[in-house]
Length: 283
Ligand code: AMP
Ligand code: ZN
Ligand code: FE
Ligand code: FE
Image (spheres, rainbow, N blue to C red):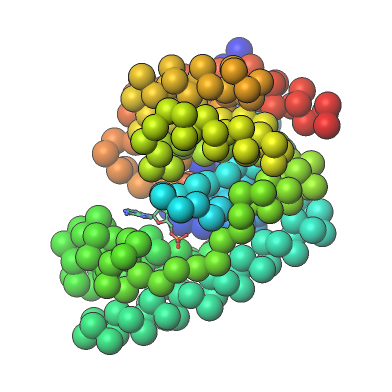
């Protein structure tokens, strides 16, 4: 059995490769399957899945939802979604509206800071997919308002920075609910970004999320230390949750991050996909 990558972004959100390109790239890299998990959108899935069918490569329809969380960012992955499910589509349209309201406000804030940037420039960089803050960062970089992508976030775009504008997020319970309604399997993404210090605090959160219908934890992730991997895996086992893994590859050569392997050390076995399928068929 081969290896998989269950956390990937495309041009449908803030990735660089189109859904077809990422599917072909994953196959060329020798992976056995991937999940496309764009932020708050399923717009890339039809293209990705049909490309997979064309070239004989398994593509799992997924998503990554940003949910409300006090001390950091909580992202919830959904795997094996029914992409035509009306409730899922209605909830995602709501998120699109919230994003569309936020984005021009970022431009306004930047302009008020004396920075010459238009929303058209951001749209152009986004290539027609959903617009996110990384696209603003790219324009700021291109126009030499900052010296690096990261500087754009640190000075202007990250939470609390000069041009930050918050956007609506669903509560974890709501996100997990619409993923489950659409026959998806809900998994907590990269728990190390939750900003939780204590072990017991994290375990309490996992208990709550499991009650809300969470089915797994993304244990294998490039930013997780080997100690964290062991801890998250133990917590997943204690609560009867599945273990998943992915690189969060955006198509950018960020610190040498590569599809499938992360920074070289990741190996996510296909058996994880079988576990996801088994749990999906059970519920
Ligand atoms: P948005 O969905 O428009 O709020 O943008 C969120 C995306 O911006 C995330 O998926 C990351 O790729 C990126 N991002 C968020 N915070 C930071 C940060 N502090 N530094 C670099 N990139 C970030
Ligand atoms: Zn992203
Ligand atoms: Fe994420
Ligand atoms: Fe991601």
